[in-house]
Image (cartoon, rainbow, N blue to C red; front, side, top):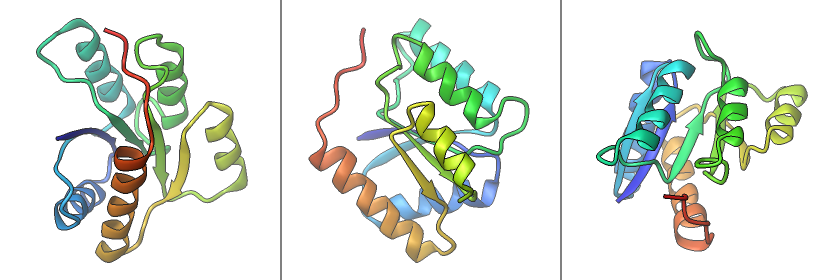
Length: 142
């Protein structure tokens, strides 16, 4: 089962993402964090508590309350435990400066949020096929 951390403050987008992976037939466990602080706390728990399963992949919105997505991405990349964790920016922004900054901070991809359930399902299938079936990822350090 794929473990996904979804950092998203919009409940509708959380629901669509969950429905998309379910509709795509991708066996996942999606943990949603509604702001950057919650996401960072969850990752710290993964670091400190053996019973908390670390994610295999992070979907990260940029426009978050409290700690924004850029700061979350920067802190993930600065943490030796999670520096190799695949982070896919999933945001409504297609602004060139946001795309450039995402990659400068070592995001693995910058995706614009789909606008329909069908598009979310297609994205879920593509993510599963590439990131979990095709790509070879380094292990998360113990």
